[in-house]
Image (cartoon, rainbow, N blue to C red):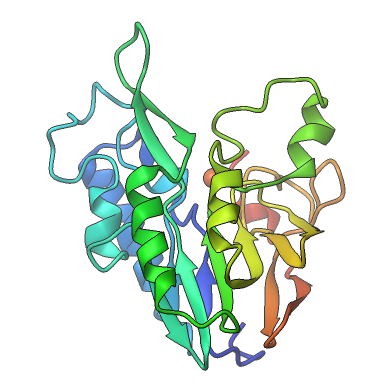
Length: 255
Ligand SMILES: [Fe+2]
């Protein structure tokens, strides 16, 4: 990535291995490892939250929801600048970094889970955030949980109920909010593979992943997807992407 000299890097979530199942000490260790690794980037790195950054949701025996690091709090403190969603401008383009995770208490069970949801509060913030933009300003949104993914349908069939954790429940409402504006790119995470869809001139790109459970002992997963990242070129009216495959060292992957 340094050799390509991009202006900025955006990490689309799933930054640490799995804080969902960790206690606070272990979660701190994983976040610190991620922060240490990011020091080798030459460009500024903007992080958004993935499901694996939420601390202890699946580990009610290890950490209480009352703990100051539980859930989204550690992300806010360590890499989010105190927030789980925010926006910034770069060279005339407006970037919106969304929080696509909504924490829910498990029904009839101890512990918590999450669904893919932007939610009313963040929608209100977004409406206000976009209000200052001209209709021509190029806008790029980043969400860990995708608005659209063929990957899920291809694996589980079109009639399988979409996993509430796989796709944004309020994706339609979200995209409608952007309609008066020049949304040219919607960058997605979560599925860990490279996918591109174009709808109403909006390019939805699942940005792939440099590491994940999909890669075990080969350079590809069982569907031929390779680890990598997307190099995104931003123009006034569109984005163009190049998927850069990085290969992998099988010894790094947990069996
Ligand atoms: Fe994820």
